[in-house]
Length: 116
Image 1: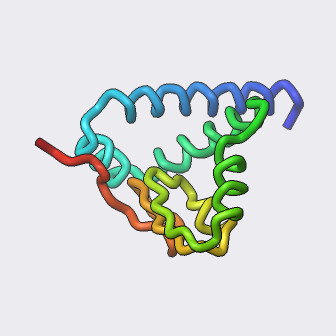
Image 2: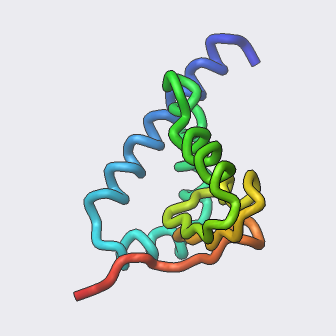
Image 3: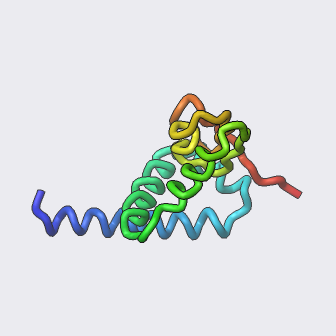
């Protein structure tokens, strides 16, 4: 694959991420949960785009939080919207990891929104 093709693929993934991110922030939790449950590949698309975006940031907020949690090894942590559960894998603390889709054994798939 040429460099131009690779760059175009990454831009498309970034666009998919922005679209899905906007969708997830503007629909009720139940709708977001249903969307991901019906098509788990959307979760992968979202996180691939997220990974591309994070590379452009001066600092990854997850890394900052991981370092902070490592300094507090007795804390029990809830990671809501954990994505791929990076925090739970990176620290020795007990971490309860939740997201719309569970792609790893330590992540619990659930809808975190409370419907009224």
